[in-house]
Image (cartoon, rainbow, N blue to C red; front, top):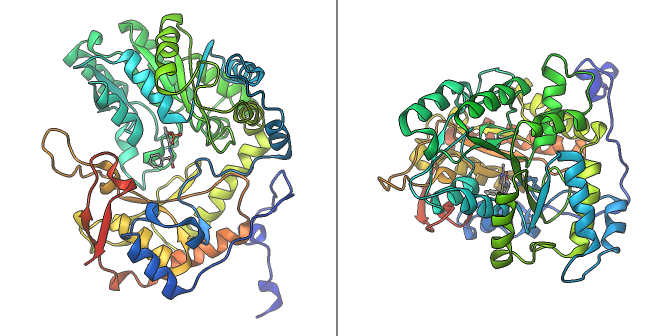
Length: 470
Ligand code: P70
């Protein structure tokens, strides 16, 4: 190889290289099992990556949820756990951190995001209500349905088009929302369910202009807005990068302004907040807080721990402040982009623009010969695992589940395989291994066949469904 080929990745992409704003202090060994063992493990797991043992996984990109590396300060916080049943000092740290960074008034801790989704859904939704939102999320929609509501997708059309370059594909289509209000009446809409960096759309952000306009429309009709704040730090990064007037503001400032247009939020703290377990609900209306506090003692734990240990709340309080740091968010999104840019350079179909937390392979374009009811995204996840031990997740027809009315599959426009990057865990070399493996299965795509579903659980079927090779 000629000497001038020896360029750093930064040089190859025509920029100066950058590095993560942390160094490694503790490591966890990983290894790749043989290809024969991976094939056997995949078959035993029914070709569902959720059913693999993590020890059989080499690079785990199943999720960025609860998989972050905590800092030395967070681990030190673990030692400061006040494990009192009631009134733990760590709860007050958590409460102060949420108030300071998100700006909401009343905080109810929960064991993780879906615990908070359960509380808010039960507190606000009545049988026959409609909940408009910027694309469904699996657990969020299920809790809304279990509370008697019907979710209505009001995201802009561009969100359903994997190659559309709209900078804020998470935006709410205000006309779609207005039509719903005209059709069912504002009194049937308890709140708008707004999510930052929309997970199922590929980690696509909502603009500040959009949330501001949404607030105005909702004010006219007396409708509240509750935010899924799970990945709002990344959303704030995209506003800082793309929206006029925000380049000079910090992620923390942008976050607080964004939240100020909403009435409260639920949080899976296992993402942005850099902890392995935890969640919270935060609201500005006392009566909603009271309902949530009444319920949390039934389903989670006392209202000053909500399913977390004192030490977990301490690590969470510290993680809230660490995660919102500008260098941290830029490095996090930068690593996702590094992987995505490699794939784009090799003409591998992914969702664009590259989102905040993951690369989403577009399985419809990857495997155009596999019909959607033979599960192309599930197939892709299985093939990737068998090639290199890299674990990803289906986000297509299996995740979409069945229509409660007709009982048939929902056929989502997006049939995606998600490569989710944990925070502060993997290096650039890991990303290179992942990219090369995707390239290998892409090159072998024409010989790849789809799957048949042989077991399907009742709720959130993607977690436990089993498949056979066709
Ligand atoms: C993921 C995780 C969790 C999540 C989320 C948003 C935008 C709420 C939650 C729930 C875990 C997951 C969940 C369901 C299916 C697959 C994976 N997302 N809102 O990997 O929070 O998990 O703490 O209860 O992304 O995307 P929690």
